Image (cartoon, rainbow, N blue to C red; front, side, top):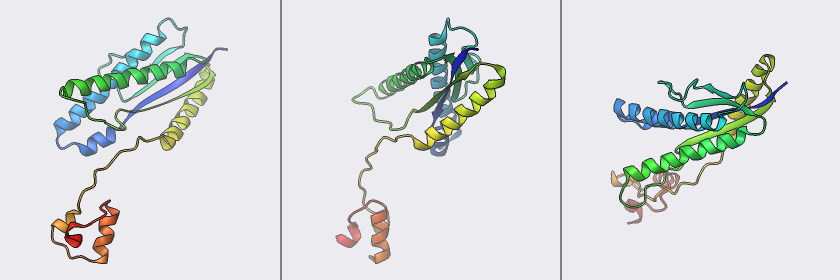
Length: 193
């Protein structure tokens, strides 16, 4: 009985792209970026798994050049090698993202993009038999849910802004002061001069 690592890798942030899009062109562009990064990850995985014994290889996408690569990748690797392959694929995606930013923002330092690309992966080890494949798949999905719930977020500095309501002429009041505090403004320009 052969033991394998089942690895799931996901590029998140798709919902955020959709939510921040102002036009269908924005949605299409964001979708293309995620699809390209997922295709890159699939190529990286396939390159690292070449020569591995069956049943190791990509599960989906079936081929890295498939016309509709999703934001998820699944593959089987020989026992103990799955995490290394996943880390290398994540590094390839991160490097490609940095290169895209440098190409786009040719002058100066490209902006930080905390959480983008949003990469999550898990690896579970188990037997590669047909009867155990469903158990292995379910374990990987449960691990992925747990990983997404417990992941570490990069801190983001939010520049301090003055209160928009005070610019609109609201009257100073306790309610307004609470509004300013909950929106990260320590001082209200209207109230505090």
